[in-house]
Image (tube, rainbow over all chains, first blue to last red; front, side):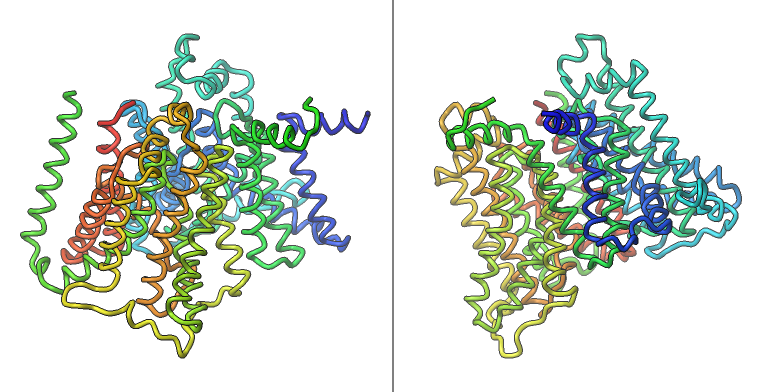
Length: 331
Length: 306
């Protein structure tokens, strides 16, 4: 009975992302057969570096999923902001950050405003936004990789801290996550975002300005992805239009593993952080124990598919039907 | 309805601009340019017909068709030693199974179509790389499939397949029970269920057909280039949905036709040819294509507010 109670706790919606994270860690450690590659500080550092790269894009995408939309332009803001920052921030890195984040913010705000005013779903519109942002990046970079010469900035961002487990860039990303979690949890804004996602038609009755929330969420999502892109480009000292083309797959997986519901209205920033860590652990962990690169794609794809199935609106119905068919009593 | 009128006016203006650009661009109406345009339109169009089945069914779009196209192209080349028709049959079956399975999952438990197809994209990339070790696929040395590369006058093989495929798709949409059900499921899912439509079956068939048409595109592209890898279909998801939307098919589903896809694919390909002939850099072409798609989505969705 105690075991069952523990399972229930571990499976509860708020805890589930952390349970998945722990299970992933255990599974990779088991596959590692106790060689200890996973616990090597270099592996942990590479996990947190990946976390810094993917985290903010996943948080942004997760926010749009909480309001029951899906922003395909997230990788576009990520990539375009990196190029903008590299071009404008050579002398003054703060200017580069400001311009890069402004790019993402503007892209998100324009798309959010169009979604609200045209009354359309975001998927189609943000597909157009994604292609436009990638096109802008191609024009800005001339189709090649452009270099960022400010070594001091990239050195600082890349510098390990906290016993060499995480870089300064990782700490910045973590701080943004904590801030987002605080806003979502403690402020009325956070409640309004959840309300908009749960029931967009009903939320205005409770005094929620859903149009403003949608525009705000898309702006924030664009800005978050952009900040992630700027930090990555500064850190790599480079930007290109093809940088990290698989951001979308990783960010979507992370958000969903992090407990963001595809039907909207559910999701927490710290859950997304756990989801991102799970994906990063898979990536770095699998390569640390010597798995082939394609293993990662298969594992990520399978995970995403499994979560999509478990999250599907009719999943419980069909399972119930299956259970009745098998002749077992329902709870 | 003033907004609808304004949108129609903008559409007409854009079309007029396109025609003007065609007329003033030297060489656009030359034979090589027209052949290249129609050829490009055929490959996009085949994928776009497949995409249209998904869009009409109310499932927006698939992000896995590019990977499916590449996979089927590789399968066609790798099995080409078994004879052309066998290889075609295997590649088509692969496309139908891969995409049909996604449709089954989406149809039965109403899983999110975007996420399922993103997952399928990652899975296809992983599984195909595992099989090929990342190497390009080449045809069997003795393989004979010159039929797929023939050209009669202005008509190349992909164009013939595209036209035949579009006619077949239109017949399916207009005259079959599946076609009727598809429009009903796409426009009002609950009403379709209430009317006794087996919705999961309709959704599954729509995805099977999407896989079929995408596999056709993969086969024609692989036969053209005589080699294939996972990049064979790169970008086709976006270009296909662009053709679907330019043709005026509503992204929220429930309406559309094959001839709209044909028009959309030809307009999209013509715009691409114009950009090349006008001497824009590849980077600028990408940006303008992106802006074009963005505008089309805004214009397209504006009229059909629910």
